[in-house]
Length: 96
Image (cartoon, rainbow, N blue to C red; front, side):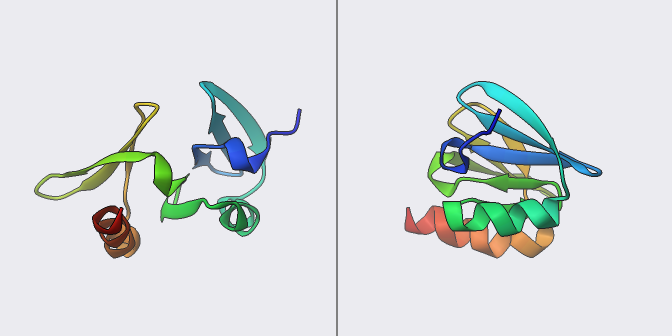
């Protein structure tokens, strides 16, 4: 089954598999996160961690603790934000 990337809220990865999350369901696909980033970025998804991408419009909260930053999505998922992506998340959340 093909999953339209326009419906995906977020993508997570483990080794050479990615998990596409949309409408309360999850689909596994064998590919790398780097390859998925190339495919998903034109559909509005952005990388936030070496193993996660999100649709920024789905972010309902940015959660800051002493040492970590996470985003909470409308579906309830909480995903970590990697150090290299923190400024982009903060800027996007501030602008929305």
